[in-house]
View 1 (tube, chains in turn cyan, blue):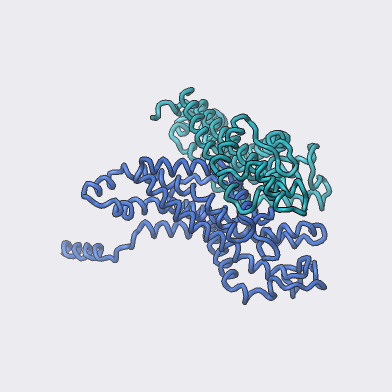
View 2 (cartoon, helix red, strand yellow):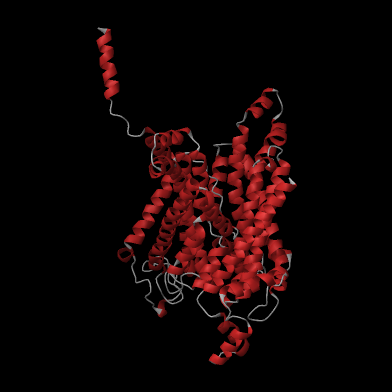
Length: 313
Length: 302
């Protein structure tokens, strides 16, 4: 196991190195002059060419690509993500400042999605081809198809504007958490419900379940002790992939609900063309995503004794 | 005599027009019995009709402004009402199908063919080429969901071409990974080995044996990816990083309507509904295809 983890970590390190290269190249090749952006932020609208050139020299922006990239990488390895071009805040500090809000929203949504999806998926599988099943299948298909931003607006329209129950946006209290969580959680639940259902259906067909029935075990024992345990494994993998969905989803949901998280920061930095901040956010998200995928894989191996990563190659 | 009769019977059976590829017919039957899938096809056909004949269907010019008639509720003259500049929302929606369907189809056509080709080559050739391609795939897939497209679209600037480019550059790896996996397992199968033993060329093997066996997966993934791409494109425009107003793109229209959400919710409701309808249709069809082609792709890139 340890060997596997070490190998995966090494691989992730390689991938992340590639990620830094791709990110940096994208910024480097992007239209627009970073020196001009910085100069604009420092000196205001009336810029002279000399000012821009001075900034270019001061920031090392005239150096060739590989020098700039290696310098940036060198700073990264010392956990120095650079400073925001617009307000010269430290990028890493800014990201860490925004992280709790995003984490709160993401965890609440994940929790909500599991609370909705697991019972719905299991029930749907147990009552296959009944009305209840059809409703579940249709609702989850609908849920997969509703864009986040549209669902969020509908919820605002219903709960905030018409019923006046919840605030339209904001951050801090539990009330303000409800609508963003509902938006993100329900759309995630749709995917999880579908997978739970198909996974459960697959397990229920297996011989050991038939054998358990033949031995006269009561249905709830069969369901909880035998079927569910095995059916939940694929869902764990999905929950790991859902993290990617979450990280993408927060970008949009945070924008709608003015939720001061990482997603909002990323979008704002893109609009400002704040290259250092964009690079920092993207890299941070990639690291978070890669590490949590590893975490899920490890958990998977721990829970399912049939999976032994060490023995493969 | 019974024997002759039997022989005649036999001849009848033999001459019975051979069912053209029974598997295909079976698949089609399974597909057409799936009510959701058929509904999806109908919706897509309807949307394609709107897109093709937009100038004939739309009662007004999509960009024509009539400030005196701004923020009107749906009426006979303006079936979906008017927006804040007095533009006909119905006409804009009709023209908007061109953006969503067009971007969805172009992006998926490009990504599925490029991604499949890379996957075929990586899986078949193996070695250093495989390594290089798959590390590229890993790197792009390390950015979750919409985030890489978001950053790229932001850097490239707004407009259809930058949205398409951003989505194409970030969406191909799913196909490559899928196809490569298939190729690796197909390569070891007896029928491929046998063909190789008959000294068939690599191109022949790929074309006749490997590609056809991957195609089902690619088609299912591609259909579901159209749904994804349409959501992504609309989301980019919604965030202001995609297609900009006054162009009648649904995501951009939805966003613009938010300011008037309290007094005139139809500004946002109609475009949002259309995005949902379109995405749902492709999801229905993709699901139906998955069931009837009997492919086992866990396409969970939601």
